[in-house]
Image (cartoon, rainbow, N blue to C red; front, side, top):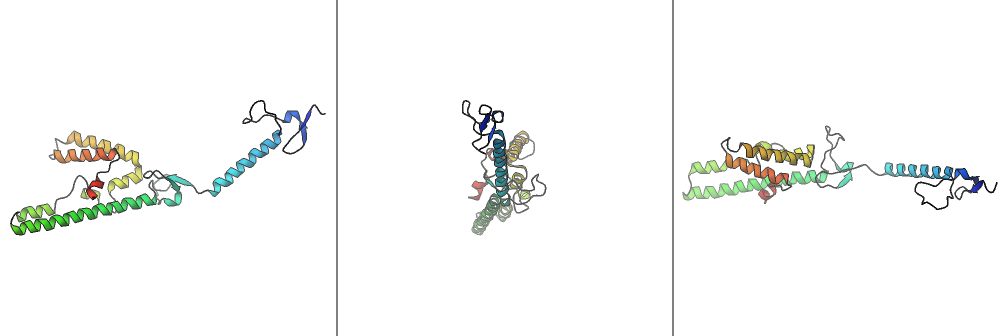
Length: 214
């Protein structure tokens, strides 16, 4: 019996030597002191412990803007998304909305300053009334087109939230190519080339609107 049995150091029972096998993570040459039954029981207990730990930890997701991994509660809902959540976290969404408001106010302040300057020059007779009215109604088709600012967030920011950074940067590269391709045929070559430069900078991670907001 002494040659065919061995005591398990885990359960302290004598078992046949056939029930002692080296574990996959045990170095070769090291004595096997735990039986198969105890090893399996330890593995099952470890798996259950991992399951309990994962159940206790809240599910997380990476924000495509700040690249930080956050709890799902940090993301606003979006019904059309695969996971039902936006790609930007709430903090980044709030920051984008604030930047939009900041740029919009900066533009309004510039327009107000321009209006006062033109009113002064008009009163001094250095500029005509027709030129004054035209200047007040001059949009910014490159940095902030009016038709892309109909909501509380600019269209390209909404695109990033829906499709993600990489997809929108690819779109920006394609859009830059389009504006360069057609710039000689639509009557506004300088504006189209400026738009191409804008989208090229955006594709490279440099948002030109930040300069406009200063």
